[in-house]
Image (cartoon, rainbow, N blue to C red; front, side):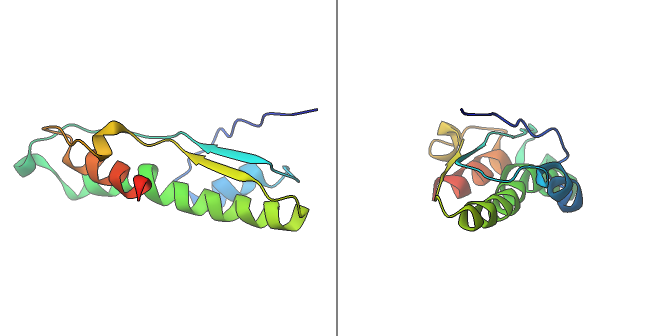
Length: 108
């Protein structure tokens, strides 16, 4: 029987992420669906805007996926990873420059 394990953690914190998924033994499918968008015009983009959005929208996806792929390999059954992106990764809109970039990176 299938079981779902929603992960309630700050995925930008690698230690917290590892702790959250440690009890999960075998994984067939990972759905990366966390994301944030902070609106700003080009001159209003701060280093914090960039760091937060890249940390949640891209870095967390990469590092959680690495952890889960190791579990998939250990189980020997393969698996699937679904990265939820956004149309804004392909069709950027005003005031969402950093978000657009992070979602485009997931699409590649």
